[in-house]
Amino acid sequence: MSGNGVQRGRPATHGVLRVHPTRRCNLACAHCSTLSGPQGQEELPRELLHAAVKDAARLGYEHLEVSGGEPFLYDGLPGLLARARRLDFVTTVTTNGMLINQVRRWAPVAPLIDFLWVSIDGTETEHDTLRRREGAFAQTVRNLAVVRDAKVPFGFVFTLTGSSAGSLESVVRLAAGEGAVAVQVNPLELAGRAALGMADEVASGDQLAAALTSAQRLGAELGVAVQVDAVTRDELTLYRGRFVPQFPSRDLSALAPILIIESGGTVRPLSLEVPDRLSVGNIYRRRLVDMAKIWMVGGRAAELVAAYERAWWELADPTAAPASAWHREVAGRLVKAEAEAAEQPMLAAA
Image 1 (tube, one colour):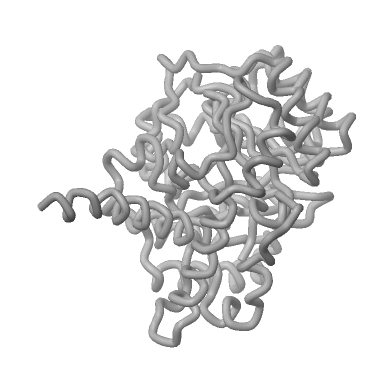
Image 2: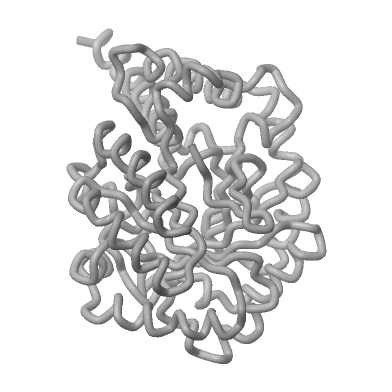
């Protein structure tokens, strides 16, 4: 199991604050989990976001991941990263890589980035198809020279789908050839645009298990750290405490090791697939530190922990798939429970 936070080159699995400050993007990718694109206007005010980052530090979060939209289209990116650095966050930015050759966008932020993740989604054809832009792959790869010249450590983010599962090796070999030190393999998240048209592209348990095996082999062969956001059935059995937190708890980061702030201000635990009803709140309405206190003692935190428990029992079962995308599985159980609850009144009325 792994996460894509980085601390001095080490993977981090706890205390990650993931921020989507804007829905503006130069692309409209088929697998985008935030419905971002060239027409996206939603954007978080800098002061509001800075206050939320400060609150997150108080709540125990130590890693700031800035994603998008395209982060390099957010004018407040330098200030956000500088603010995070002052609060002793480790900073990472995830980008499609097509704008980092623009000096006015890259130069102010390069010294403030601990690690840069560049999205590479398979072979050139697969990448351009998902990105809906011919030539996107070639431009991104060309722009890696800018990152190397700035001596900013970087890696690739590879979205694993049912169709692209066989392309992991080509991405890792590209990483080795281009000087990337890591490849993060993220199973497709069914949120945003991906939920509208890619439900049949979710990687199976067998494909996740194969990716984990390939990651170990390729990492050893090519000297690239390959991390897969998946967990094996054996890991679940051996390390239950890592997946099912103690409850009740006063530690938000223990219950929600990933906390997501969306461009509309919604604060969501764990995954974009978690239903709105389980959100921590919205930073437009209340300070994050205050929302967290309310959420921790209410039924929403208990419901999330119950979903961890259900997912663990089902996925650690000897008959379950050999590997699973843990966060997606937990979110899926929350979605299922919500749908079943909605059906009950209709069944009673019938």
